[in-house]
Amino acid sequence: MSNMLATRFTGLEFVNPFVLASAPPTESKRKILKAFESGWGGVVTKTIGLHPVENVAGPKTIFQRTSEAKPYVSRTKRPETVSHSSWNWELISDQPLDLWLPDLEEIKTTYPDRMLIASIMAGADGLEEMANWQRLAIACVNAGCDALELNLSCPHMDRKDMGANIANDEDVIRSILKAVTSAVSVPIWVKLTPATSTLVDAAGAAYAAGASSISLCNTFPSLPLMDPETMKFEVEVDGLVTSGGLGGLAILHQALQRVCDISKAYPDRSISGIGGIRGFREAFNFIVHGAGNLQVCTAAMEEKGSGGVGVKLIQELKDDLTDYLQRKGFSSIEDFRGIARERIVEHAQVRRKSEAYNGGYTASAPLKAKAHA
Image (cartoon, rainbow, N blue to C red; front, side, top):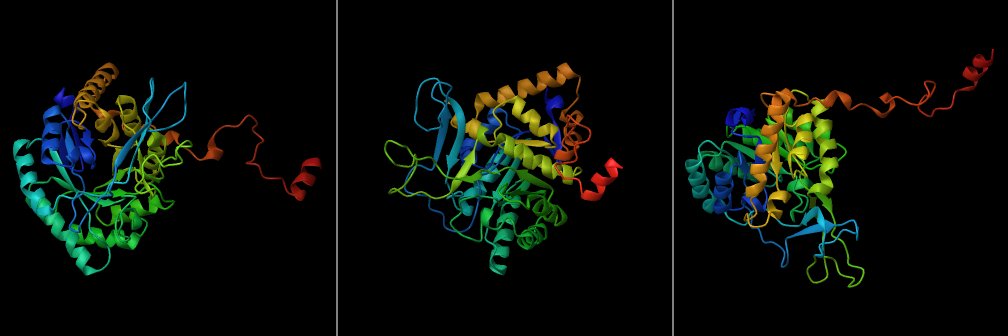
């Protein structure tokens, strides 16, 4: 099983392609150690920064459900419902770098065969912030991290020079990557926001500036729902709410679209797929669109009794992928990675009922006259 599931991604050897994403499941040494004990091939730590972090004075994450009988989406618990999505407005790790570093060393020493990726974030305003990126990168690599993931995608940072607020700026992307790649030599993954029409261009700028992989998709900017009976948002503080991030199954199809867009534009570059993976079928779809690595968050958090790290989930993912590879005669996920890519075409390339259809354009008068000649 280990040989069949083993994957090489951005030059790193993973015992399996399944990774816990940067989020509450990877917020502490205790959780990461439990995740590795359970069988995850890697983890991306909750984002580590240098600036002060203080979360909102209320719930940070909610899980929304729906059902056939009452098909509205709500966090309200009711019988016979299934998971729809997660919503959060949580900030990055509030654990300071100096406390993270000994934890990272212990984690890597305890599980040397598992890939430990540190998610890091600093600002984008001036040389001091570029130096902060370098300080974070050097410290995490010296503590044993195998790679870094640059968080340029968090959709609800309170600072305007961080997260998704800067992800569209190609100059900023290049500046940050220049700073980090000049300081360390490990693979650099760049986590971009999916909420932009210039995602492909941003990814291209990141690859050209030294990114080993693009991580897609972080949660989508969104708002929680308001209860029609109470006239309150399902999560709020003093009656107020702001933009947060939507994740889970609800973003699966949009995440696949973004991964496909990047994969088609840069078919020879690496992508770490994220967004709505609850089992093998979702993971399979990311792989066939070009992802060589799979990150999971919401499904792990929702698993009862696992401490939020998906103990049963990782076993199911490994077992189901192994079964599929054996049944199909594949030696690894590389045998089918990207096979959907060439079947995703422009709308005009899909066959129509009539061969004469020309995309809805009206024929010009000379063409009509010629047709009747």
